[in-house]
Every structure is written in structure tokens, then in C-alpha cells.
Image (cartoon, rainbow, N blue to C red):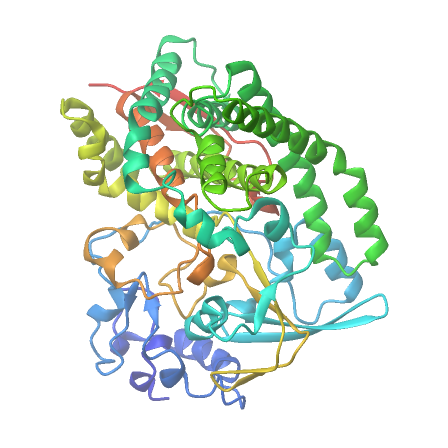
Amino acid sequence: MDLARYPLLLPVDPVVSATKLTFRQILDLSSKWPVLCGENPLEQPIKKAFSHQSTRCGTPLPIAQPDDTGALTQGLSPRISTDRLTPPIPKRGATDASPLRTLIDTSRNPLAIWTLDHFTRSHMTKTKTSGKTTVTEIALARPDLIRHVLDNKAGRYGTFPGSLHCHDLNLSEGMGANQALAQSMAQFSLQALNGYFPAMETEASLLADKLLASHLDPDMPISPVMSDVVSRMIQTTLLAQVPDIESQMVMQTLEASLEATGARDALTYLDVPAWVQQLSARLNQGPRTKLRQTVLQLVSSRRNRREYGLPPKTPDLIGALINVFHAKPGLDDHDEQITSMVIAILSTCYATSHRTLVWALALLACAPDIQLQCAAEARALCADPSPMSSKIEAAQMVKAVISETLRLYPPVPVMRRTVLQDDFNHHLSIAKDSTVLISPWVLHRHHMLWYDPDSFIPERFSGEARHRIAPYTFLPFGGGEQTCIGFGYMMQATRLVLLALLNQLTVHYPAGQSLPVPVQRVGLLPQSPISLIVRPRGP
């Protein structure tokens, strides 16, 4: 086998050259050959299919120079330890599993729908039967195929009817039809985010000081702590003009709504009758209805205050949206639409920030060497008296840790599109009424796109390596015309909290415990609660 012709099939160990293949490695690669180079014209020419998009650890492979062993490191130093942290993942589904076995596994964790083939091939097609309806699902994992769908320049793809992320959270769909309107808001501009720095930095520092002064529990559940600090940040920025009692009520009902919605959304991955999903939606309707009523009341009250000529305060999220609609003719009373947008944005900022912080701290607790690098950055920045907003970009390792956390635990594990018209996508025929799945969970761990894809390697996103990550291979917040609006807020919140905590504290796992397996609900939740040992950092 002339492996030099296929650099994507060379050994994954960056210090092993093509001339040092063992007999077992050759056999292993040979066994994968039929899968990777099948008769399908989309799969057969591996070099052509991935030539301009292929990445391993974030750097495009130089196809023209397959013997360059430096290409295999993708910007990583050969001195990097091979003893890397590889977090546990759910057992991947089997292509030959019985329908009953698949149903049981998927009911426990929807991530079980993805088989090993999904992580090694450019696309997979499956026919599902739900009741009397037969649906063709096409899972895409090739960047140019994904770009074609997400850019949607021909208008051939629509949002999935009944999708959680389309109607309730907008986590993957951005603001959907309101994208242009959302872009007209200044609420998430760079200037606005810089304006949030003092309030957000204060909340992060208060959390670190509170933990440092308290009697730290041997095993501290980390999720409630991160939930509280993110809630406080949102209350003091996006809900700054809402009274404390009412803003607390909004955040409490928001958390309850996310839990109920997550339970309902899990059913969308099961081949169960439609009436079962409808019944589940009704049973879980209460928390979402309460959240909507709470926010709608705030919106109506704020708009009425404006109509009665009361002097407006500095606009927060609700005020900014009211101003946008008020400035457009015929849009004076759109409380329902404003309420939907407020809920979508709050849900995005809260859920993604909170859960990314939980996973990032858990990963750092298992990687003390990386935690030390982040702590060194935090101490250097906190010792500098200049405003944090002017120096936070210097925390490159902290930012790389957050990006790698988002790669391993994407806030939106799967995005769905319905096919509105027959399409021909890079030699792949896609029929009308099919469903297209784009899974960041699969894409971020694809064996053809990332070096050592299941391991925690923040260096992928540091230095020059981060600039070489090919488009549409890293999609934690969607892509194309429907990128999530809350991305900037989440990155700012998570960086400030990590810098404040690591400046004063260390985190470790209790003896005998380790990272839990992620479970798909709204985003990826730990299968079991994460408790960490938090201690003051020494001099």
C-alpha cells in the first residue's frame, strides 16, 4: 500500500513517520480502506474530497507534500507529552444493531445514534420510519458539503419543523428570520460587550473572593456555582434595568424551562410515534409557559412606560429591542415577538456560558499542567492595573481552553435542515423532503479532520494553529447566515470567570472520581454531577 499518496491515513502519532509503520498499524489501516475508499464517488478519491478542507489539529494538511512529517503535528511541538487527557465518551452505536437495541441506547443518550462510520466518512444516509411516514436522513461531515447547506444561497434548506433549537432556543439557528433585525441591535457589538466588562468582571471577582473566604467543601458541586455567577452576570448586563426580584424570577423560570425542554428534545431522536412526542411537549409545557408570561409582562411594562413619556433609562436587552421595533413603521406593538427574542438570547447566553464553564473547569481539574499555564496568564493579567477589557486578549491559553472545550462539548450537538427542493451538493444528490443533519459533535471529533480527535489538546487553538483551522470544521455556534448571536457574550463571560478563579484557586478531582460521560439534552450535560476540590492557589 502506497501510504504516501494518502496523507490522511498516516499514523496519528505526530512523532511517528511514514517509514516507521508497524505491521499492526498497516493491518489496521488496511481494514479501514474499504470504508474510507468505497465505490461511492464521493468517498473514493480521499485526496480530492478533503484536499482544501482537511485539518488535523486545526491546520490544513499539505496534500502536495505527503512525506512532510511536520504536517502531521499540525503546529504541535513533538515535545508535547503523548500522555494526553482523553475524556470518556458514550459508546458509539453499531451499524448492525437491532432497532430495539438502538432505541434503548438512544433513549438513554441521543449521542448513541452516531456510529463509527459517521466519524470516518464524509456523509451517511439512513431511512427512518416514524408511524406511517418514511424519512431519509443525510448526516454530513465534509466541510464543503456543510458550507453549501448552511450558506443556503439557493434557499433549498429550511429549519426543521418542531426543532427545539429553531423555535425555543435559537442556539444553532441564530435569530432565524429576525437575523437582519438582530444585527441592527448594538446590544452585542464589540463596544457593548466592552461596556459590560466592569459588571461582568465584578461578578467573576466576587465569586472568586467568596470561594476563597468560605469554608470550601471537600467535594464542591460545580454546576450550581457556575449557574449562579452566569445568572448574576446576565442580570447586571442584559437585564440591567429589571428590578432584582424580577430578574431573579426570569433566571429561575429560564432554568426550569431549559430542563423541561431538554427532556422533550431527547424524544426527537427516537423512532417513536408523533403522539408520544406531542404528549411529552404538553406535559413539559408548564415551565416554558411561565417563562414566557414572566418575560412578556416585563416587555409590556417597559413599552407602556415609554408610551407614557417616562424618561428612558440606559437600554438593556429589552429596552434595545423595544427601541429597534419602535423605530420601524407599523411595528409599535410587537410584544410577543420581542418576548421570543429575549427568551432566545437569554437562553443562549445562559446555557452556553454555564455549561462551557462546567466542562472547562472539569477538564482543567484533570490536566494540571494546562491549568498551571492558564493560572500564570491569570496572575499576569490580574497584576496589571490596566482595564481588563484592554488586556483580556493576552490570555491566549485560557481562550484556547475554552475553544477546545467547545470542540469536545459543543453547545449544539446537532443541527437539522429540511430539504425544500432537490439539490445536487458536490456530487451528492439530496432529494426534496429529506432531513439533513449537521452534527458538531461528529464534526469536531471526525478522524479525517482532527488530529487525536477525542483528546483534550488546547494547543489546537493557540498561536498560528488557530489561524489554520479550515472553515466549517469548527461550528460550536452554527455557521453561515445563522451563526448564534450570543457567541461574543459567552466567550467574554467564560474568560472572565476562568481568569478570576484561576488567579486565586486551584481545582482538582476527588480521588477515585473522573470526568463523566456527556449526555445530550439541551446541549451536553454531565451524566453525573461534577464535584471538584477547590483550594487556594499557593504563591
